[in-house]
Image 1 (tube, rainbow, N blue to C red):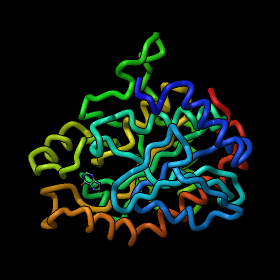
Image 2 (spheres, protein in one colour; image 1 turned 45 degrees about the horizontal axis):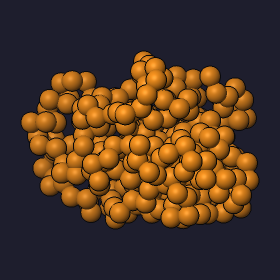
Image 3 (cartoon, rainbow, N blue to C red; image 1 turned 120 degrees about the horizontal axis):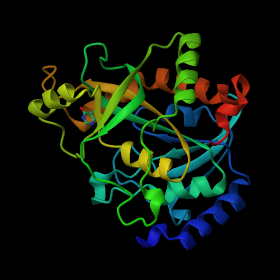
Image 4 (cartoon, rainbow, N blue to C red; image 1 turned 180 degrees about the horizontal axis):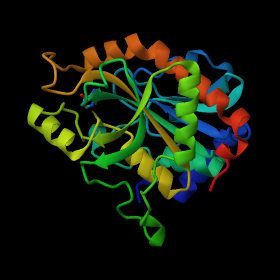
Length: 283
Ligand code: HPA
């Protein structure tokens, strides 16, 4: 087992979380590119660098920070993971497993995973928000390789929580935020896709392509967290527009659309307990 994810390291991380922040908030959010604005809207916030949390791996990617923030978003206490490690950084697709298992052991019940992605459909142009209804693990890598016991055979039939999805769509309608459901495909990266790959992914039924989220969903479902996933579409995927894809251009688009995305995310997080308390209870 990777030394950053042993039960002892996770227990030490939970002790540190408890000591610094007190009891766990019910909701945690992993902030992908473009989604960071919610962190600036947080009130009564405290933070801790990932370096202080032994089970949390720091991201080296430009545009991603490395700190956990806990505070109030629209009145609701939430933990924000500002920065995630991607599989393409080290080849380790379980790089986020220590952090996610620590959140669960601390007492978090719902994990919201956000990302930036390339759109594969004309109804998902840059700036759109997509709610993950399902995913395609095109890498066929699993963060559960090496896990023992029968719990590793995780049911992925409703990986993105149906009740939370319905709730997210209702809040989007109330806020007049266009939000469409779709299937997210995980490509390993870090290179962008070829146009031929994109045509194949579209034929498979994918609506957006990105380099994160799926391994986190698998770990979260394995440890019993309920998951909600949101993509901010920053570009049309390769070959679907004349644009040459660069990380800088995706970050720029993520920042341009980020205010709306963060506003919606804040409203969504803030709405969770008031509308239907049992949305936060674990099944
Ligand atoms: N492909 C993969 N990941 C991405 C993209 C893309 O087009 N845009 C943002 N993240």
